[in-house]
Length: 246
Image (cartoon, rainbow, N blue to C red; front, side, top):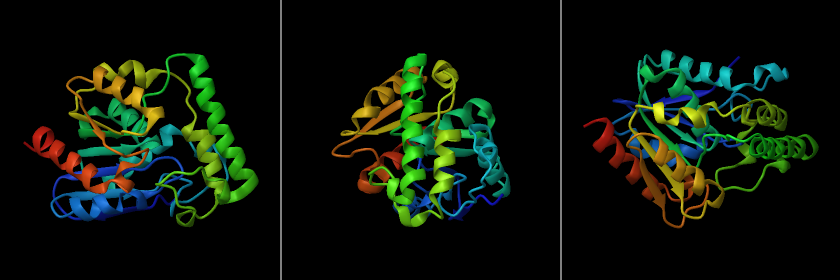
């Protein structure tokens, strides 16, 4: 199983995880800036970008994604890292810090959420994930939902994305949401001013994670690293300097 990742720069390690149906390409501007004095690691979730897309649905799970993240850090010789995660990548980063707190130096959650407490809300999310998968099954990469960070040209096939929607994007319990107060890593929550679906979840995470900082990017929608890289990079650098590398 090949999990594509790229390491650029030197210095403190930052691991970037993209959202569903995006890829490591969405962090290109941030890597160009931050790699001047950090080791930046970007990767493609299985089924995405240049990573393999196995045909077995059992190869797509949150647990395997966390194993991929740990393996990438191990391969880079990084005992600890700052995790930056967008959307699905933010949820995976939350799961990672809860499972491996000793490996996380800081946490940056970008336009994401911690899951759901109520079964009905979780069921609605999973219905959305299934619609994404069905559209990809039926229309191929033309079935990608519209969003600034998505580019059909970076993916090998739609099949892996559909399997990832069903196996990784789908929610199964409220563990992450309930565990937010236990997170000890310095945390920055970033949300686009116009990202209505993730405004409430971002405020909730910032309130529940001890000493978390909330930054709203003016004029941005769901993907500030892509549409507003200057503002996003400034917020990230400020957080790293003040809360992580001080």
